[in-house]
Image (cartoon, rainbow, N blue to C red; front, side, top):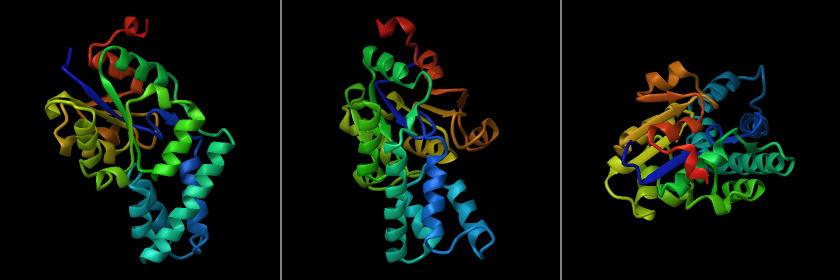
Amino acid sequence: MRDITVACLDMAGTTVADDGSVMAAFGAAAAEFGLVPGAAGYDEAMTIIRDTMGQSKIEVFRRVLGSEERAQAGNRIFEQRYADAVRAGLVTPLAGAAETIIALRAAGIKVCLATGFAPATREAVLDALGWRPLIDLALSPADAGRGRPWPDLPLTALLRLGGGAVSELAVVGDTPSDVESGLRAGAGLVVGVTTGAADREALAQAGAPYVLDSVAGLLALVGVGVESLH
């Protein structure tokens, strides 16, 4: 059993399924600036978006759209479209995610949900899922300083939740950026999951010491059993 006191779990693709809503929202925002299939720059923009999954959305738009004004406008469109998906019921819990969070907390492990979304979007997702009572903390890049792949999100979670050494921190996500963030933070446990943006090979290449089929597998790694649910 690992001595883990804080678990920092990603949202979209790790604990939350969105039925492709993230990419659809990115596509809608890009289209407003003429980045549509067949247009110059479209393929490059989509490659950047796919390669930076898990990172701060405003930072992605800065790379794709250039100027700060265009980036802010693109990010607003993204947030609006994703909010539409949340209201339409397209954002749902991944199988076993809620049960995993409940089991971790029952075992005394504090849980933070971290995301590249803006705080307003993050809160809308939590409200739609009814997850506010399940977690100890939720963080966006705006709350921590920098988004992934920097270590700010997991380290902020550890500090705010009163965790001890970084060896007591677990970081779980579905993208290479999540993995890099956890490794940079020096987390005692860094886990990639294949329920989202990246496959097993990509997560392993990013340096993930563990790659699991779902976040539910985290319980065995930290020595938490099903009995913790009762």
